[in-house]
Image (cartoon, rainbow, N blue to C red):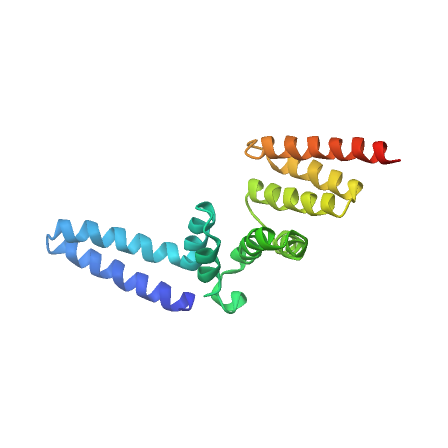
Length: 178
């Protein structure tokens, strides 16, 4: 459903809610406000992405993939601000299957723009993990530093520290094999 249709539908629901309040139907009016808010939220946040995020948090990748696959043309179905988040979700799902293939999704998400710092940090931390898997310590270190800088609320501090510790272990193993 296009955003214009969603806006028109939301406006009609809002008008109906106002009419309910005018005629004294307070209970139905309050319910109408809740439905109006839900309708307006779907203009800015695609419901398929919201449900996919829910299933990603529950670690149910098959259902998350099913909901994300409902978005057939993200450039037309999503507002521009969501394009980066769409690729971030694709990257998170791909990283569960084949981590090396997820790099392109994280880079695309960063290039399209992520507005929340912890999401930028998550993408950069994931890219650091891919760089570590490729044994590219310089790139991994760069991404870890950028992730730490982007994580202002310290939501990913433990994961960043764990990744740094793994890099240190990787260095010790390389020294041992020389």
